[in-house]
Structure formats: structure tokens, C-alpha cells
Length: 208
Image (cartoon, rainbow, N blue to C red; front, side):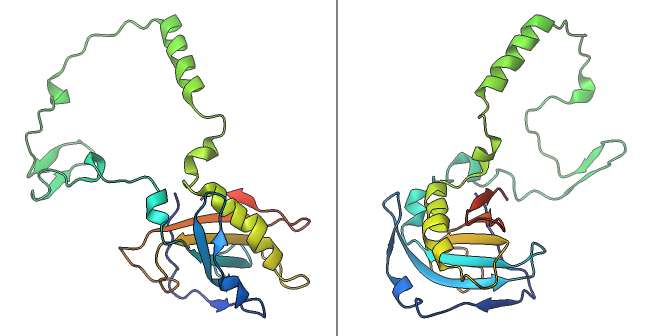
């Protein structure tokens, strides 16, 4: 999933219109979640041309995203050790190193390994089959389908026509209504970007 903080000095303008009040009504997403539009921001500072940023509040967003707690995010033992230095030319390590049970590669004298080309090719084929046919799937948010639906069914009808046509649409979901560009360590935010072709109204997903 993608996380984003607004760059310092970004120039942006909030967009509004007669429909702004009614757009505050809850939006029922395909997953069953409820979203509420917060604001739309026009941004030209990202180097991709005119971008519209649509921000939405989804109070139960955290319950819809897999937890990252557990051993992978626990504190590392020995985190209070002193600094170590690594010589990039000799690979020599000095400083407050710890005995981690690993074997020093310098003490090894490995014998040449006999490689079975046929077995190696079969193993490689098994790995390739296990990979998804579309690598972009690995970069999608857990609520990707909801975000695509928001772009196609909610955002596109609200882009002025005629009027300035954005080249990119960024949709963000948050479980808290935080000011744009601010950082709240307790807020969960998801971002996805879409390209808007000049010749048709279609949200084309862009992996970050």
C-alpha cells in the first residue's frame, strides 16, 4: 500500500460547488464500508501536470487492512547497542558488535558445489509459476476495489466539463479527518493514483 505526505511549499486550491453540501452524504462502497468525502484539492506541483486529490474519511478503515503487528514489527533485541562502523572497501566491521550466533564467512572454506542443471531449471520453473501473472497486484491496497469504484463512479462525474481537465487523480482514504499535508501517527491513510486519459473518462490505475 502507498503512504503520502504533502511536500513543503505545495501550492493547492480547494474546489467547491453547488453539489458540495450533498456530497457530504455517506457513500456506500462495494465492500460494504461507508466513506465520506472530505475535500478535493487541485495540485500542480507534482511534475505530472494538473492533479485532483480527492480525500475521503472511512472510520473503520483499520479493520479492513491486514494488521502489521507481530514479530516482523517487534523491537529488535540489542537495539540499545552502540554504533558500528563498516569499511566499504575491506568489509571490516568494528564497534559494538554482538555475538549473534552467525558463522564468520572468513572462517569458511567451501568446496565447489556440483550443480545439476536439470534440477535447477525445474526449481526455477516452479518459482516462476508461483508468481502472479500481474506483478502490479502486489502493489494494490487491500481496499483497492473500493478505491477504483470511487474513482469511476463518484469522482469522474464530478470533474467539471468543460473546465480544467486533470491528468492525474489521487484518491486517499483515512480513518481520521486530518488536515491535508499534516502527519498524525495514529491515523491510517491509503493512497492510490489514476491517470485520466485526454480522450476518454476512465480511471487508469498507476502503481506508485
